[in-house]
Image (cartoon, rainbow, N blue to C red; front, side, top):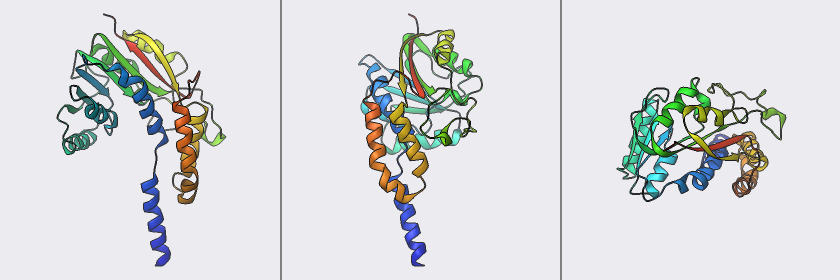
Length: 249
């Protein structure tokens, strides 16, 4: 009985300590690169593939003048994010069910961002085209996604060993996403690499230790430090990329 109680206590501790490295890196680059695109004149921003709503809710809290619209194709996820927005008292963030490969329900927005979504969509060209079409002339688009091939510290995390069944593709070849965005009608203005050497090491240590309580306790300070170092580094390459583009005026 005592052993079971200890195991349960350790499991609850692990849940409290859970720190998603991928989310942490993405949120840092979102704050550093996407948030500065929002000005006093920005009125409507679209989150294409809003998921749990972390980015959309953060924008709504930071910019009371901004109307934030999150789109996701899963009705139950949309219901949860709507409930969370109500719980936080945020009336200017809206979550809608939508298929990104079809014309989007909101048009003429100032900006669209999409984090780790297009790699899940078989017809990514249609999704990118509809994102660009939803922008007003001069509006901006920011898309973050994995790249391939990737560099890993430990072979067990190479893409030929670790395949995500939810991905339509494991990543984009370097230059491929930029080309598809240009074909969709926007002009690429900036590239930012993420998951460089230190971010990748943090992710691999987190992935290995995530369901082990003692390794998590020992490694978490190092993992957090590596994420901070990643965020302060100017990367010339990485396992993921953020592409920022503008729709012609």
